[in-house]
Structure formats: C-alpha cells, structure tokens
Amino acid sequence: MTKRFNNKVVVVTGGTSGIGLAAAKAFVAEGAAVFITGRRQDVLDAAVREIGGRVTGVRADMARLADIDRVYDAVQQRHAQIDVVVANAGGGTMLPLGAITEEQYQQTFDTNVKGTIFTVQKALPLLKDGASIVLMSSNAGSSGTPAFSVYGASKAAVRNLARSWILDLKDRHIRVNVVSPGPTETVGLTDVFGGGEQAQNIKNSLATQIPVGRVGRPDEIAAAALFLASDEASFINGAELFVDGGVTQI
Image 1 (tube, rainbow, N blue to C red):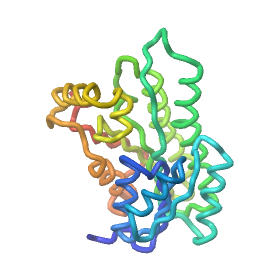
Image 2: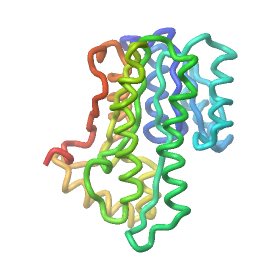
Image 3: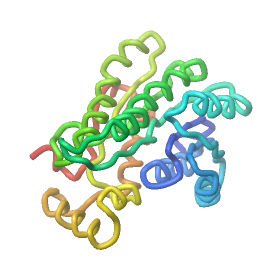
Image 4: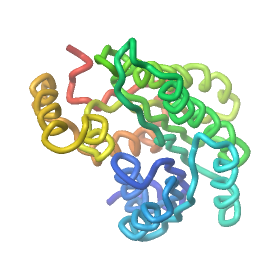
C-alpha cells in the first residue's frame, strides 16, 4: 500500500454501504483519517466497525443543511483542515414518464443535487487550498434509461456542477472531478431493481450489454475516486471518469 493519503483528512458522504463504504475503506488503508456519514445510526456504527482504523461516523442526512453542518462541526473538533471531500451520498427510484411524482422528484434532487451542492459549499471554510473534491455522478447522466429519467437528470446536474466549480475555486487551486459509475454490485442497485431474483435477472441482462461482460464492483469505483483525489491526478480537473466497463463508449 502506497499510503498516498497518509495524515490527510477525508470526508466520504454516504459511507455506510456500497461505493461509499469501499471508498472509506480504501482511504483508511492508505493512511487517511476518514469521516463517513449515514442516515441510520445502527448501520453507521456497523460500517465504522467494518472499516476499522482511523474512521469516524457522523449520523447525517446530506439533504438536510443542519445535518451537513453537524458533519463539519465533528471534523473541526478534531482537525484544522480537510484534504478531500467525496460527495457520494445519493440514490434514486424508477418511475416512467406519466408516473413521476412530485415526491420522487423532490427526494431525488434533494439528495443528489441539493445534497451535493451544500456538502461542497459548507466544506469550503475547512478545505485546504489545493484540496480535492470528487463528485459521484452516474453514466445514467449521459445516456437514457427507461423509467430512470429523474435520477439521470439529477446525475447530469452533478456532473455539470464540476464545470463551474473549477472556475469558482481556481484561485484556491482546489480540483473538482467526477466519477460516473455504471451498474455496480451494491445493495442500492439491487433495491432499485426490486430485489431478489428479479434484480439478479436485470443485472444479468445488463452485463450482456457491457463490453467487459459484467457489472462493476464497489472497490473498482472506489479506486477511481482515490486516483482523482490523489496527487497522481494533480493535472486532472473538471473531468468525468466513466467507470462502467465501457458501456457509455459504445
């Protein structure tokens, strides 16, 4: 292990499962002090135990501004600055046009867009000059998916935030990059597809459309986030890295 993040402070939102959990594990393994967020205390506690090492869990719904403030208050109690923010918290549900509800729209955009905006904005006073921000988007933001338009639109918005933020943060030399995963083997994806055999059948079908022949693993997405956050990516800014087995490219 290279310890690329030795003694650095990293915040990973939505760090209790899937991609966020994998990213938190990887940052800790590379020497970072990591803060993760989750909405349920029991799940958060379990994730902290699973990650081990220098990790702190803060219960927070990243769509709520007061909860975001609580996250950064917890960081500030222990550290003077933040080196990396991974705005990973997000999610979505499937409803086709004609069945979209105001509740689905609000929940999706509050979590994926509002949450991302204020996760980053409220981090600014603590972010070190030269820090790195990684936003978690999706390849659904660049292609159409039946019954997934609201989610895709929210993730397209996340991707576009980086384009302007690299200009807003230019004088502080803070880089902002985007990871856009394809279908990834997570509990969240299984739930979106209805769980059980139905979800597995959908994932099997998706795998046939992906050039590498399978869905992704959370650790593969985490590796991309770590790279973009690291000094190895020091000249990469405003980029979108697709980690989707090539499906967006065909």
